[in-house]
Image (cartoon, rainbow over all chains, first blue to last red; front, top):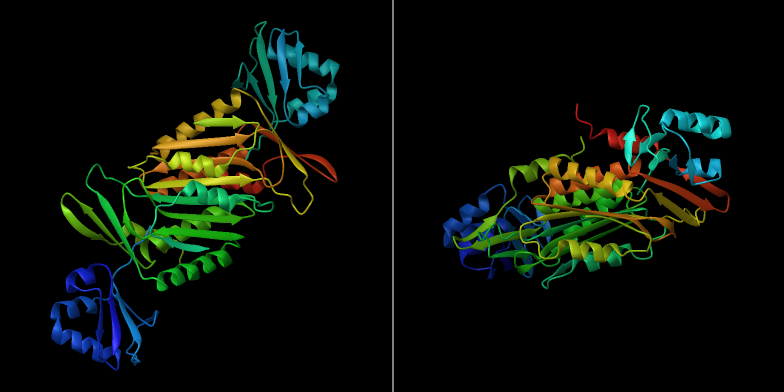
Length: 79
Length: 79
Length: 148
Length: 148
């Protein structure tokens, strides 16, 4: 299980901002999203979208704990 | 006659800040200063010292009116 | 210090507080980003952050700037939520003994905030809403600081 | 606006006023120069100006900066007379649609003020008084803006 957070245009696209999705790894989580929402899966694959697990950026697959927080971060722009 | 103003280290050197000195041109004014205070004259000759007549910078000799204001400006530094 | 705030803030107050009681600083540079109306094309700007993560990422860059430019102090305030035209979005202040370091550090931090800090920005106007992403200009600005 | 003042001023107040009611500005850069105590080596700084001439010379450079960087507004406040450590000496703020212009114009004006504006600066400390003149660094900084 992981708490999944979507930011920026990703949450507009998916229609949700925060959801619990059962998965033991990031790869498994992506697989579930691919099944449920192919358009969101496609958007998450873009190289500009970064992934944070438990508030640390990751670039490879990682295991998820039951209380892990996974955030998908589209291109950022502050100021 | 001209009202002569000294700024920065020039007024420390001369011991005055503002004085009336009779002169019909800048060259004549410099001549009078050379007679009265050779050390000040020397200091005014330094290329870094700029001269303003009636609040406009001048680089050549100019005529002075009776109410002209002549300012000698050593290297400037604000901020 | 890094501060995210939902409420409007006064950049003047922030600068006044930041400058107070500094007898060895010499130079304080600041930048204030203000929401533009774009001649009526923007009614509202909405800034989303990732609470916790966003502050920590900014703090990491503020620490990098502090080291790189030998800063004495740095302050970043960033709005989140809906922001009306004319309101301050971001305020950065840097303190250093001399002006070149203060200016460069402030510029460096703003380039980072514009194109790399974890914020997502949506503009809503008469033509609808759109997400703003860093421009090529923003990326070029950021590239100036890359050390080879 | 160019303002010389004998009395202490609050840079925060100045920035707050400058930023107010700007709905098309986007970017305000500012610089505050503060008198340093230099670990007790400076007790007092004294700034002399040439009233009238000084304001006009600064205004001429502010107008040049406005044209060169397409500024929307510029403010320069400069202290004269005796200044204690920790007090603001100079404040420059620049307003532009985008940040690069605001930063560069503020930097440009400070370089000018440091080495070319009609001020004379005397530092008094336990070792006596000395006149401060532009450093090589100040001259190098200024040379960055020369157009060939």
